[in-house]
Length: 428
Image (tube, rainbow, N blue to C red; front, side):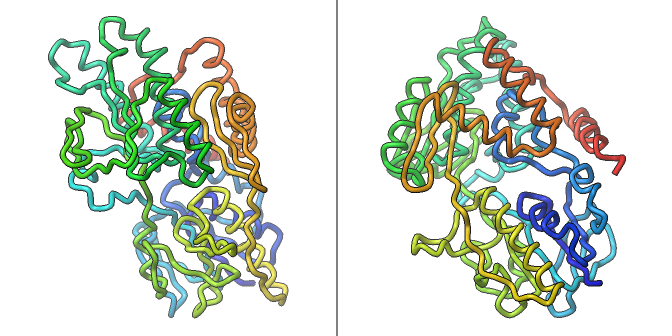
């Protein structure tokens, strides 16, 4: 029996592993975390709308019914394509007959001075918890007169894509409702939330009218939108933008871009912004036993419009295709070309406001789009318990304007909380 080694338990890795259920293949799934993160809702953890364990789900609980699969928690340190081995920091190297590389990406700061040290990215569960703790800490420090300093309550969000737009909108509503009520002696209403985008409009992957709608809705909520403006430096107390403008803010959220895992360099192919080019079936041309999916892969759209975006839906479909391709080979059948099925793209701006682009060029905005966004994300969440918790939290927040997770979690408490999350899958 052959062995399929799957690196990464994100959308791409899980998609590949699940597609191999029932195949005559031993599947080994490896990730440095023992939980899967539903990244589209990380901004809601960061803005106290959801608990961390709602968007994180134990990997073992997701695969414990798959008899041909084993999961290991380990950190990948190297890939040797020649010997078909992968090395890890915590355990011995593993060999494979087929390999699926779904290692995701990291934050790309584009060389902006001070960004890596002082900005708050929003790509992992730890990022979201750290951002929420930091912001609540700024409010607590401001309660002690003079302890926080200038810009303590101000926020700059860098990047006008879906993550930046969703985060800015959620921050504005958090400030306007819960934080004004929680801190009545602070000038919360005067705090500035600024969204900076170096392009000419928001949500550039959507039609122009959708980007304009998103800008109007954010500004209606009190967000200052600065287009055609680039952040050139970040400090603990603010950012330099444009030709030398200074924005005073002790919180800067970085939602401006991703770069693929540095392990992509081990794949022996030319990289484009760190992403590895793949063949039509998502394998490497020189190593057809290796499939590359998710944020680390550069997949042609097939429509002459550049590569497919780094989205969870792309990663999931690509992972499933890679898993089916390995299963086909196990049965002596050839692989097929990957074709992405575009089911639409969406982003939420705040209560009653969202944007949805449907296949064929149709789009929705407003309350109907917002309801559709909520339904889709509930359906995509991993695990029935996560869906139930999210639905309850959203309903409570809708009727009461009360965010149930606005508590500060210190480093030790965070480890304990994530440990509880892992424990939910310990019976696997």
